[in-house]
Image (cartoon, rainbow, N blue to C red; front, side, top):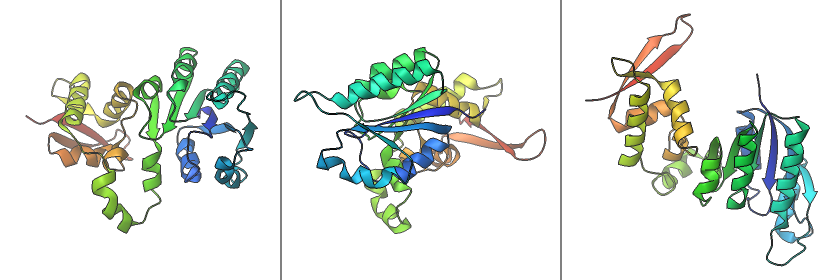
Length: 241
């Protein structure tokens, strides 16, 4: 069953570039039935957002900054999120922001049984990231629209390295799920990695999928097996001795 999602965007804290790619990413996880963006639309800084709202059917919510130094957008988003929660019209939320002020909101929504996705820049503080079920860096969505030539030029600087810490995380996760022979189903490994580290994403390391990421390390054995119905291959992984 497809999740019905409420997408709430912090217009003051997220760049408007590549909003189309962001909405396409969200569609992978559910149907965005509510799409709202919050900000003070009298400010010129949000002009770029205005051009893409209609194209993506995102409803702008006006929020004036009543007090200097205070972010009224955060309060408006939080109040709306709780209203949507109690309306029982959605199964989950996508909070689009790089602001740690939404940490408690994400936690509260999950306590209520909601699935919470987060999207923000790499500067997003860890407390907000770990409060979500899954957190996606907006930078990896930007890379998806770059030319192959630009990808090659930027790869060294923009892609995270697969460090020993990452390899240790994958190895420990495989061990947690392994059968008596040491093999674990890759789908289960990916799900558990997500639970352990919500911002884990193979695209952060320059790989579209988890399988090529694991292959690139040279630390794991990979076995492709026929599915019971023979329609596709099942991939299993094992820690290499």
